[in-house]
Length: 122
Image (cartoon, rainbow, N blue to C red; front, side):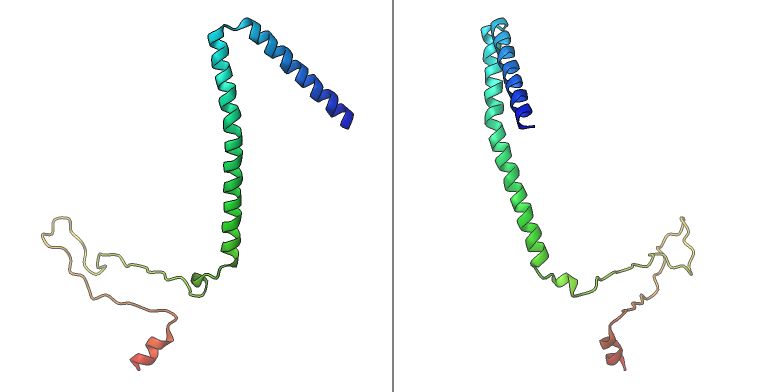
């Protein structure tokens, strides 16, 4: 397996050199300058992109570990869910031609799961 990879690598390198010589002899000077600039730009961009990717991966791993180890006060308290009743009073029909808005009935609130309110009311 090791010998096959060496032979394959040498074959790819020989093909790349042959292709470069063929293209180099058939391109004009201006086209060769553009191609050289593009290859150099890609060569400079790749290490920067790899370093940026590694930096982002390390930051993400560090955030994941801090999220796992940090205590969340949200986990101690149950979520608060507020359900708003409809604005229209169901006992009064709404007419699109009425000049005044319907009169709202007094609102009622129900607190669920808080025993301290029951003790204060008594």
